Length: 88
Image 1 (cartoon, rainbow, N blue to C red):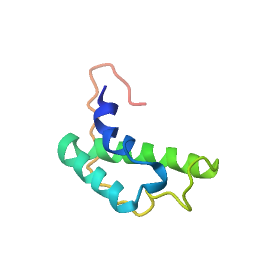
Image 2 (image 1 turned 90 degrees about the vertical axis):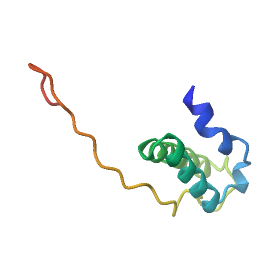
Image 3 (image 1 turned 135 degrees about the vertical axis):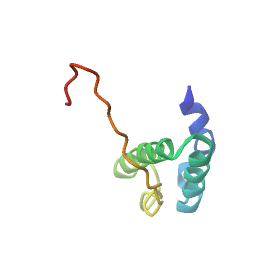
């Protein structure tokens, strides 16, 4: 699926060698190739995974290297309702 494509550069890196600048470059490249919203979502997923790994002491890093990575500013999507459909 798409995750293999999105995550290939990160999967090759050892977690204890991930840097904020390397993650920023990954996000920027994802944004160019796959869209800014996709890049932001993948960063959110990576950040959550690394937060858990650091907290559980599985990842040997002093802190999450996603801290300080800048997300893209994206416009929120508009939802268009069909006739009879209700907004949740």
